[in-house]
Length: 311
Image (cartoon, rainbow, N blue to C red; front, side, top):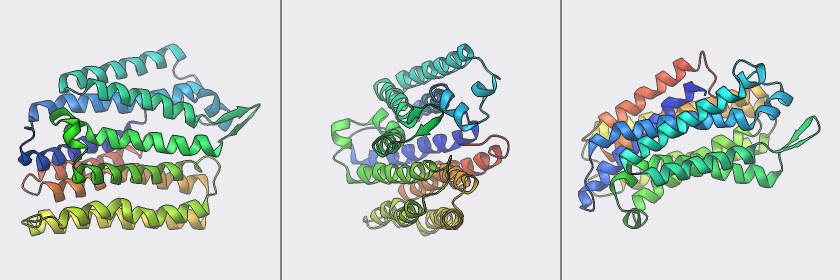
């Protein structure tokens, strides 16, 4: 289940809660913090269930690629793996129902199956090929999953017709979508290496994914009323994300080997914690606990990744 990646998903909920609190004063809805535990339960079920789904659907591919994952090595049976995945998705649906977003959680689960099916590629004998059309569709689907996931808190409180009209939500979701498109593009080369041209494009587009939304927030009237927690700290966190990712992308471009690409993907997944921390502090500097809690997810994920690979 690659549990070391889970803190990045928990950070999504915290960032989404900050967005909901920032938008609530407009009078269209009220935020109820009591829904937070159920949103977190839905996140845990969806994310870990999705990882289990990946191993189940990719078992043959993983075998051909020599990946030492539990189903391939026989550490867990097919029946046991299916049970774990089903139990996690049921937990996700229970959390989603209690938070009022059961339909959206169900859609997430469908998209997860779709992504994992697309990511299998085409197995021809003892070879695995990844047609460009399937790869591009897979990138878009998994990025859509993350954009929908970070929106769950807002969907738990607000009306969809009103939410989609809000520029703040559109830019927030688009930033997450682009960020995970870039991380997933890098992951396409993780098994075989290569991709220098793609990595160059990823490096440039990363600036847009990280900086466009902060520029929008800081341009709004009254957004800079807290110079430290509302401006300096979030920009410092986002700069930390950019510098770290650019350094890894440079190393991967110079030597596009599977280990270097894997490090970049892992850092990109953990980097979602920093992205959400920066965004949350910008959105709700008067409620800094959302951003600080998202920030705390980063060292937890980094520590766990020493024992369990996030990719």
